[in-house]
Amino acid sequence: MKFLAGLSLIASVASAMSVDLTQRGGPLDVKIEVVDNTNVKASITNTGKEPLKVLKAGSILDTAAVEKTQVFSATGPVAFDGLRLRVATSALTDDAFQIIAPGETVSTAWDAAHVHDLSQGGSFDLKVSGALQYAPIDSVDLQGSIPFSSNIVTASVDGTLAASARRSFHEKRSVVQSDCTSTKGTATRTAMSNCRALAVAASQAASSGAAAKMTEYFKSSTSSTRSTVANVFAKIASECGSTTSGVARYYCSDVYGACSSGVLAYTLPSASYMVNCPLYFSGLSGLSRTCHAQDQATTTLHEVTHLSQIKGTTDQNGCYGYNCVRGLSASQSLNHADTYALFANAIYVGC
Image (cartoon, rainbow, N blue to C red; front, side):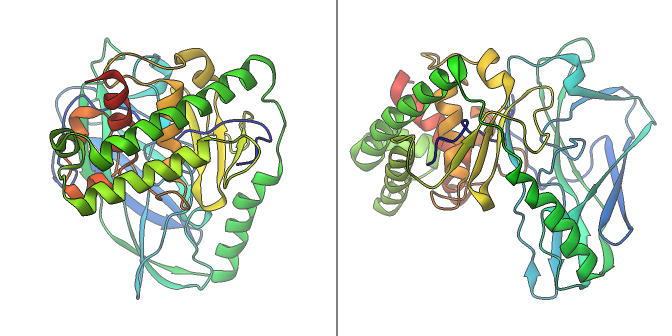
């Protein structure tokens, strides 16, 4: 990993309760339409009787190029290759939320071509589904998630225009400032060192540690599961073990404009490109001794798992934190970034 300017992290907002993200219904009605070739407009209506205070970061309300749209061609799903965030759970402020009154509809829009390769043109089906984290109206403490699923729309895409939109987004990564210096540079290097130590211990625990701990986090302790998890942690240890080599480039400048309120850091896995946000440095300790807490080291570890060369993990449609991770299946857990971060924390702390 080239230590050109900074450190990484990616989307994680710890949910306080386990949620079935395939569930329909609830107080959110989401409808989408496609305009101007590949631009998606979503209208989100609160159909309930109480106001909703929902978290914007990492969701369809985020202005950053996070995963918002599911896109399908005639041959199957079109891969997402945009940004993945990690969001703070204990340093949120009111401006990180959107309040939607009963009966109110709020709109948001984004270009699906930025983070899906639609350059072949033709017919594509699009939909939006997932969950919005929420807090009480008079609080910033996350209480759980509200699932939603939109209508499906079919778009006839001009491939040339879609390719142009995609290039305009991905070329932003050439605009980089080398600003990981002084205390930011020290914190970044320390986090990488701690990430390596956590990964080494977690790899050993996955390989030959208690079966109950593997089952708690990965829902399985078979030899196959142990081997997979141990190998992922071994790759993490290698990636975090050097600031001058490896697969990722690290920065401290907000190149993609994704450091909104509550966001700790983000990455573009398809380009092995990772960025630390200001809150990473001001809102996290270096290494926590508290079970399931966020810190700089485990946030770095979480983000490294997103790299395609390491594991290419996802965040399972907004499932963050221990309680939500406990509700995942074995197959989901093996490809879920927070599961690896939480397991590493548990081994270190002794949860």
